[in-house]
Image 1: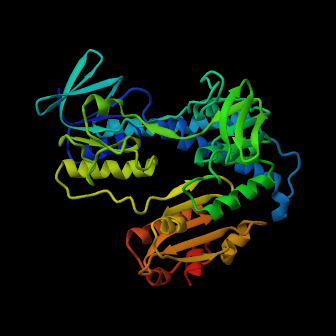
Image 2: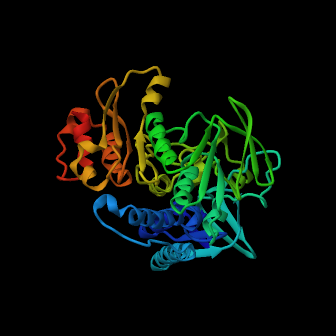
Image 3: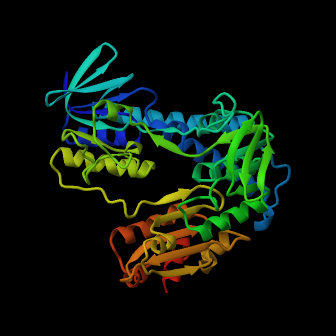
Length: 444
């Protein structure tokens, strides 16, 4: 059984590559050792956003009086909230399986082990052996459990357990205030859980604009979330998290401890194949090609941007490249979103990036309330929009806090990708009234 392309991993990169190659009339086989859809669909992006939407609906109902809508005795059933999440995941998973069938893609469940036999790629899975002309590694990433004294996988939650629970804890300590940590802080606090965030960096959301991160932290502090910044966790003793900060040693207790310090690429198969690494990352060119000309990689394994939408584009580039269509990966305009309430979104460079590079930039910023639509729909929060232009006046970055940042950040991403100047960006006609008009207001 010989295929044009063998893919290991059925997450966003894997199933996107499979469908694209099949539509190019290539014979494709896809190996997945868990569930189609990968971490994103089964224990990441989709489950968290489904739960967060329920929490947002609940909070909107509680606070309806802000909009002159009176609602009494608002409550929720968290077990049913989780059941709805599971239904959404099943529906989307079924959609991916249907796409694989429609495109006549061979899907094999199990642990795949590839090896090189001369110029031919051989993949073993169980008792079966397959061969392919090209191999695409989409092996994803795994949750990081830091080497903290007393930390045991049986004693703490990772995002997987937090998404599976049908019963909310009374209190939770989140170790890590990055994107994952803040989304869980938003979820649990919205449903009345006492939340404390312990973050080693000096501000939450490391890598995001610090001014906007501080605004988000202030909003959640108003909602009762407690924060310990610049705090290094040194030990976990039962239900107690012990950490050191500028005030010395401190501790916080909670019914549940949730570790959210990030994810790491799954390099095992790449290492077994003897692929080259550079600076602890898989060595790849702009076409997603590894040091072996017939082996490509896409998704979290690249270690560049552990985001599903990045993985999808990397997969497209890889398939185009391996079958002779000119293409290359550009990471300059990858949007990042934090699905809290209010939402945070960022694309391109931040002001801090320019400072660290010793470069000059121009910063434009306005409260989101300069948008009439935003004022109509977001009572009691001003928000912020920042645009960053480089030395030549070319738009290089955008950062937002305020709903619906996740839906409008793509406008800035397209402008940055197209290397538009601020003056050119100003000439775009936005619909009125729309929150996206904030870009025009900010760039003036």
